[in-house]
Image (cartoon, rainbow, N blue to C red; front, side, top):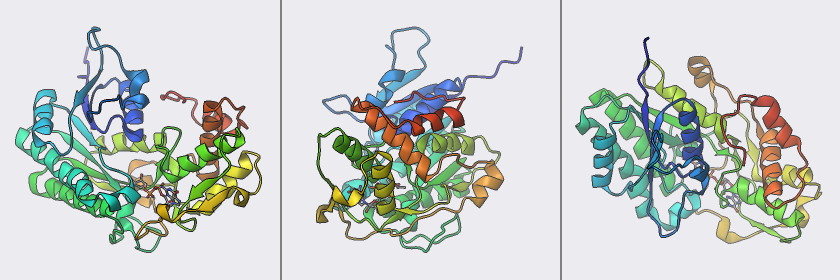
Length: 353
Ligand code: F7E
């Protein structure tokens, strides 16, 4: 019998929103999955706890390792020991507003971290495929819609670091023939999204107000427009990029752009709270020194070459997220979001939170 070799993947940032879903997807596909986690005195692994098994049990396929994108030695050692077939580089200080407060740390982690991994791949001499989590933030103030040919005009230290990572990935592909891809993902959200990113901040806030635990929600720039999709659909395409014949870069998005204000309006309405303006106030601390005002992706290339397009758009995403945050506070959710998940993803491979 011609049995295919089990593939091994290494995920940096496995404990993050994207890393946790990607780990679930790859385990489901039969991969051995190794993940790099940052040390802290408390466990930061809440999103992957349901996947974790005692390493002493025979046949365990998820393995966690301490490491850090600022620590070259740990990166080199892990790649040498694990010899992965594929590396998904998702680790980053990913909060755009925070990157203005910690620009040097952000660039060390998000820009040089990528270089450290690529050097380790090159020096290993192994045919490792590499996925780099680039970002729509790289487009910054370039007019929408943005695609693979749109010039970058980054508007934050985070975005500048991602532009470096994008180019160094492309360079290692061209110079050293490494199978290296940039996934230029637009905002992707869901029930595991960190609570300080705008969508989750709103859906948690709405649930909290509904439960009578809070009265107000303090926000920043309500005019900014983003292209918001569902994370589970986006990690599928990360894997897909590495299964192509040729390494390439792709914009991944929904093709719809909506303002933060529209998100607030829909979220408060769906939760049955009525006019959002009764509950929302602005606070200067959430504004950024420079902003990417309008990001919306043109996914023609991904549609054509990867045969990929998302099923979930703006309205559905809000319903899915609100239903989950209602459940977390023991409120009965309106239920449309749960229905959408059931209908559109009968082959669900992830745990519903
Ligand atoms: O902000 C505005 C804010 O922090 C979205 C990261 O995953 O996606 C994310 O970056 C918009 C911005 O995400 C608040 O000014 C208003 O215009 O949810 P966000 P982001 O900056 O777009 C990209 C693709 C990444 O790569 C990043 O890693 O919402 N906004 N009021 C606010 N944003 C926050 N966080 N909090 C507010 O109160």
